[in-house]
Structures are given as structure tokens and as C-alpha cells.
Image (cartoon, rainbow, N blue to C red):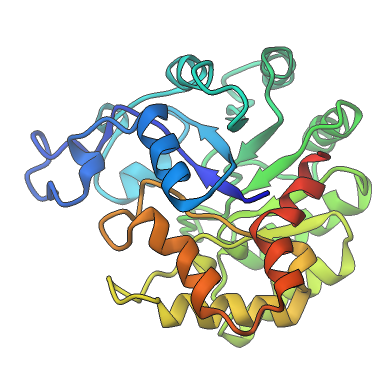
Length: 299
């Protein structure tokens, strides 16, 4: 079983017609990325299932504005993704983004999404000023644990002092993981600290401390410096470092499709590991490409 632990569907993002600085080479600026296209890519690459994360312009507004965009520059969301998931119900694990508790009844929305079939949730702590060590958010996490759900966390686009530092967020996470030891939690982008830098040890130490913490590898460290050069030696170096540091049983394969399709084809993303990663034993590769994700979602 091969599982991609981070993909998205939407009509378009950062529309090149209204944002002339964008390029049509990034197909998402003008082309719909629906379930038909994603499943075709998965079939070609030999990927069986994916964590499909739905979000809308509001969910990612903070990051969009950092990059010079706004809510109107993204078209998609939960309603769209659920319609697309219904076409291929056996290929997707649906993940819904947790809304800002200052604006919504967050717990009730989570309950509704679980009833709709959500296998887990994604949280952008910096986007919604979320303190995972607070009583409110610990209660949310306890509810997820009770529901046997899972949680993906992404520490992208940190802007101290407007946001906490990564050290601050990891300290909150440490407390939260101690309080909910049976809630599977994955850090997307391998925790958003470059694992090749000494600071990356902060994430490694946290994974070693908490048995319920995993890493998803798309753009590890929130860094992409390979350009289009297959087989992506810098990506390989970061994944190799993570495998050696935390083990393949805590590391999950991911593409973040379609955000990097201008740099690499979907099939190239998996082939670089299948064909050019001798640092994985066959058993470790099987865990990385799907076995660990199966354990994470409880399949």
C-alpha cells in the first residue's frame, strides 16, 4: 500500500489573470485540479491512497497575505472537495482544516466533519493564533483523541513577533502531546525546520520523546532548493537525515500536490525514492511509502 500524506484539490490558486506576476507554468494558477486529475496521477505513479486536505481562502488567508495575495485569489474548499471525494471514495482519506475558534464554534464544526467522514484534521496554529497548551485547545485535542481521529499540524509562514517562534510553537506542542498520548499527530513539512541544520534537532528530539508524533516529508523544513533537477539531491539528503534520526516508522511520504508540479512531476516525486534512495532498506521504504501512514490512520 502506497499512501501520499498530503494532497489538495481546488479550482485554482493565485489566478494568473488577476495576478500577472504569476506564471501559467504553475498550472494551478489557471487550471482546475480535481479528483479525476489527481487519481490519474496516482494511478500513473502507483499510489493507492492519499490524505486529501481541503481548505478555503479563509483557512489560508494569513499565508496568502504574506505572499501578496488574499482570499479572493483561491477558489476551492470543503464543499468542492467532498463532491470530488465522492467520485473515488476508496482513494481518499479526507482531512478538514480546523477553523479559527475566535470566529466559529470549532468543536461543533469538528463534530460535523467527523460525521461527514473526516479521518482527521489539519491545523495551522500560526494562522489562527492557536495555543495548543491552553485549556481550550487541549480540550479540542482530547475530543479528537476520544473520536479516534488524527491531527496534521503545519508551522508555515511564521512571522515573529506577529507569531511565535518555532521554538515557542514546539514547546506548546510538547505539552499537548503529553496530555493526549493516544492522538496521532503529524508535523507536515517535517516540522518546518530544515533537518540539515542543527536547529532541526528540536523536531527530532520531540519525535523521539512522543510515540504519537510523526513527520510528513513534503518539502521537508519548508525548503525547496532543488529546482527541477531530478532526482532532487537536496530533498534526498533531508529525507535521509530524517530517516536516520527518527526511523522510517515515524516518517511518512507526501507530495503536497499540486503546489510543486512546476518543479517535478507527480511520478518523479515517488520514483526519486523508489529508484534513487539506497539509504532505505526495502522494509524501510515500504514503511515510508505507506506502512507508517496506515498505522497513523489506524488501518
